[in-house]
Amino acid sequence: MPKINSPRKGSLAFSPRKRAKSQVPHYQSWPAYEGSPMLQGFAGYKVGMTHVIMVDDHKDSPTEGKDIMVPVTVVETPAMKVAAIRAYTRDTYGRRPMTEYWAGELEPALSRRITLPKKSEGDAAKQAILDGIASGTVKEIYAIMHTLPGDVSGIPKKVPEIMETRVAGGTVSQQFEYLQGLLGKEVTLSQVIAPGAYADITAVTSGKGTQGPVKRWGVKLRKRKHSRGGKKRHVGTLGPWNPHHIRWQVPQMGQLGYQQRTEFNKRILKIGEDGKEITPAGGFLHYGVLQNPYVLIKGSIPGPAKRLIRIRPAIRLGEHQVRQPAIGFVSVESKQG
Image (cartoon, rainbow, N blue to C red; front, side, top):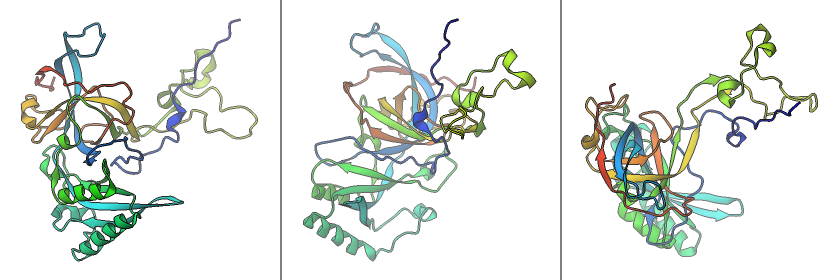
């Protein structure tokens, strides 16, 4: 009798599968960069999908040099504001925040999210950072940025999302000087990444609630002979007799979706300024009409429409090369069916 073998279904690398703590994704690592100081992150709102006609510029591709149809995801990317500068020190226990230097004039809507700091605290915080840079205590400089959802008609919210973005390149002193010039001002996506470059896209996926092991882990349905009582969607076993408990590797029911996921090396095909030029007749499904700058990302990305999307320059670039895409057509046909 042949030995029946099949690999386990569902990756255990994402365990435990539980709901994300925050709908604003958080990055634990950033790509290496050498050059003049620059921000390494941006955020937008997922709109939907369409397709473009572009020239295939992948070397040795069967359709190299020919027009191909490529599915793209549209992300609305209105300007973000730099609200504060956060300085980090480092000790034997790792990285620790030292202080924050907030802008003098902050967006009024920001008070819906946090308690705004007093203006009198700014000068003391700035001097503390400068003294820390001079003494070598300050090791890293980050920007505290926030979105402007009030400018987006497709997002039914006014409360900004706050996130931390790394500043890379140059010395710590140069990074602080660079951020001082941006403090309280608007930043656009084109200041972070260019068309044709590769980026990592992070978002919280669509939530599907509690699901059984078949949908959650891809377990096979039980056969007729083994499904007495109509229980076809149960696992065949909960594990061995010893150890005398159910191991965490056993596929069981639980939360599916609404988890932070990152897709690496997604190509940025186009960064546009006027969203109305790619809005289809009747608007995008579940979103509406674009009013702000936008970006077209090749392929699909996590999350439903209106979900906050974070964009970071690719950290695992490998052999990918930045190539300027030649887009000849963007579909604006109605998505209403």
